[in-house]
Image (cartoon, rainbow, N blue to C red; front, side, top):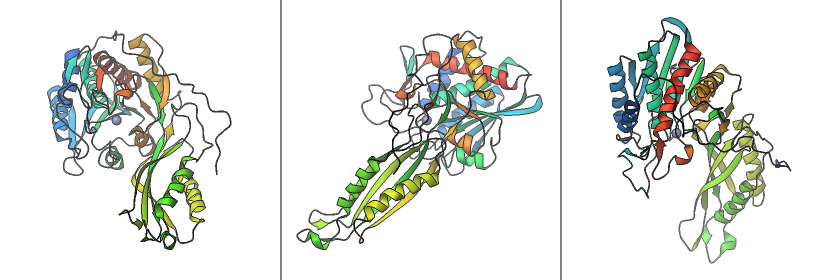
Length: 413
Ligand SMILES: [Zn+2]
């Protein structure tokens, strides 16, 4: 069993400071109202996942690209999962920059005080499902592209904007599909525009979902000694899993340890039968340096301990299809340096630099696409997946300016 270090790591990264009080100082070629409208149009087309039909959002994005003379294509690996890839080509060949954001959103859930798809503008914010996570990132990356094209600034290489489907349920028909088909893979830089409160984030933790089945033997509940109670052994397993400790530690992450949580349990079928089967689901968050093999070996060791208590027990662990590997890039990477420079120019302050405790498509850009990827977006992730989700209009304008300046920094002639 791995053990927790005696002294806990210190968090080096402070809480996100508010970066949404100032207003950008650079002259944009897109107006605030155009930026606001692009996000409102996206929010007003529900793209709830499941079932994740993103065709309506794709229509909005394709219309903007058509009006601005930006090349764009729809990529639909299965009906309804529509990705949009927009491209700006420089006057000479050169480096490639990918921007990536998802347009699918989680269901609205309860307790909204406003229409989740109304895109209400109030008090300097826009309200609705996806305003933060992360149609704001998608709208602003496209508006930055429009701004940069309108500016006519000379550049080399290519800007590839990926507005993807299917992020909230595994990315197979979104970012993974694009990268595995060579779209953006191997680019020189990437920006994942997930909400970061305009913090510059250099990586995210990894994730695996694992299902465990505990099988015992059924018997009449009046003669429990003739059965093997799967729920009782599953309970021991839950306790053992929740007690797991890990040696990996990285202070650069918002959550500096790996974590493991039993998140679902289902067992038995009626009240007077000793249950034959109990199923658990486990969420395992990984730090850079941990591999899938490590994760499964640690879990198997815990399973084997419980299994050893009764030879009639069967316990099987199966990993689900979705996967996100952890990653962390160096602050010296050109994409990070460009982000810092652009942030300073627009905000007039020093950026906060950190990394993400959750996982995102940046994981796929970095690990499958082999692209140094920074996470940087206008929303405050504490609003993600919540009722009355909203984003600040100031942050939208600031993000648009910062992305556009990053294009110039990274690709400008
Ligand atoms: Zn997201």
